Image 1 (tube, rainbow, N blue to C red):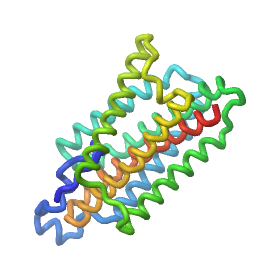
Image 2 (cartoon, rainbow, N blue to C red):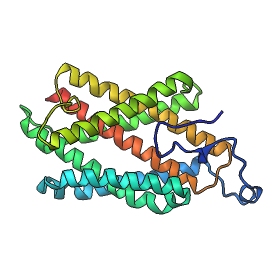
Image 3 (cartoon, one colour):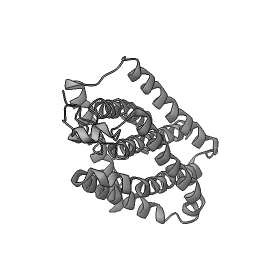
Length: 260
């Protein structure tokens, strides 16, 4: 059975476990491995973290660039998606530059939460909240990876379709809310609302984002077992990186809401 990830980066038949890759590629040890995906994911996450740290102070002093950075990340993600869908080999070339863009995006969101939102909170936000969000994200990754490796969780059938629909709905909600806020209509603000409903909304989003890790793992598993070409390790690593950045941002927002 073909596995499809909810992550649009990984949602491609390139990872199909039943694809018949040519024998020459198989015999040259040029196929996907778990170790290869792990190494490439580590490289991309290192770029994300390094870029985020390096750009934090700059964005904090130039708040007007946060919106531009966010738009750039969205456009860059679309370009990456279209490019690798047309030619998956480009993932090896584009993954690292876009990881830097993701780092800018994560930095911009962090600056917004810590500096803008924090300035409105009664007691402000301390920098330890960033580390707390990172540790929680790592903990969720470890938990889901352990559960998946032990065979305790698989997402298929109706559950998978519901999860994918939920992710699409969340994306549309955020995009529509952002567009409306740009034209002076500040509705659809649950992502930033510190009320009980807003907190519950973000908690649900974190749950959905965390479950999407399982779909990413399943796609990677299909690629390894199907002996997919090694260059697809970059594609898998990039998709996993995007999911982890999403989880981090949502966790940071939840912590901010709880302390607001």
